Image (cartoon, rainbow, N blue to C red; front, side, top):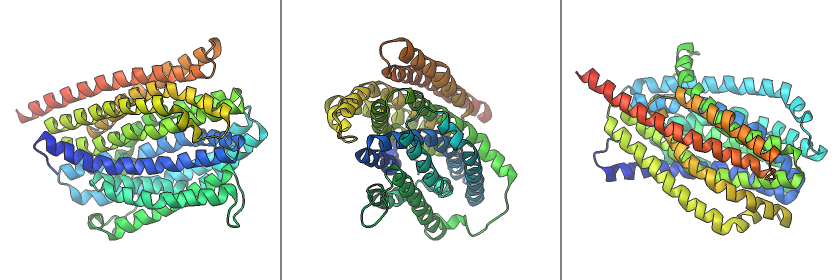
Length: 454
């Protein structure tokens, strides 16, 4: 809805943000329980799931980012009162999601085994990683389909619905993890591989529930997404890809840097890999705060920019980024005070707990940079300004962050912790550059609106 005061904006922001945050936490909790419960089974299973997750997550987040491009498209159509075009855009995004899923499955079948064979992994760790990813593959198509339908529902401001869907599925995921990892109630004891099977089943559940809501429940049903099926429109795919590909690659560059670090750490022992993954998994859970604000800003800034209300769009940007910074400082305190207890959630072994706690100290610094960079990207997407962010993230993370991490880890006494120094450096550079880009976009957009009005 259109807002006129700052207090109304705060209220609408919270209405949009809180369900998104709850949804992201629930989705992250699936990864958390995969890692946590696999770690309780054995350190080798924890390391195997860590390697498998590190290979899959950059692909998932990057390609999901492409499909998330439907969010600013729908937000702009909604803000500019062109609701009749929304249903067609969503079904084309679904077709695109199916095509992406099939491509991932085909490529993965060819390259997964050679990649794992090329890594210096213990045999048990490599085996768990391979079969974890094979099991997860059965959930790729529903995951990408759900990503499109969720983005559509969120863009309409109905973030509570996607929150409900995800919260319903989380207990199912935890139960299946329990049954399949540990072999309870007559189910096979699959260890870390069972986490992959459980996650794939959960993806099918949330996809089917989403189809029901979009097809039968208002306000989604009025757009007739599944009522008026059309053929593939390459023109609409081009529009979606023009926005989605830069979003996807920017997301890929950010998430893959963490995966690259995990893979490069395979030269260390299993205990170090397990501790690194445990700390990174918890840091990823904290990352759900800025990423949820990012998604809320894409919706709200996109709606206001689509309607030409630039002052309101700017106020939402400031509100979201400022809120993210405050929350990051609060989570920093949590990591400092409860580091040992957090580490204990992932393992029963003293050596793993102590090393995880040390990694969590480094996590404090890069999650503060995330609090600036990630919401800023959300605001830029709301303005449909996506290409510069792609270049900024690539340079910050891969040209600066990874080399600094490698040099520090290889040529100093910091060892594995050196990679986290590189992460901190890259994220700090990225946050500064993205914030500067947002200021430029807001200024250029305001000038353009003045020129058009004259």
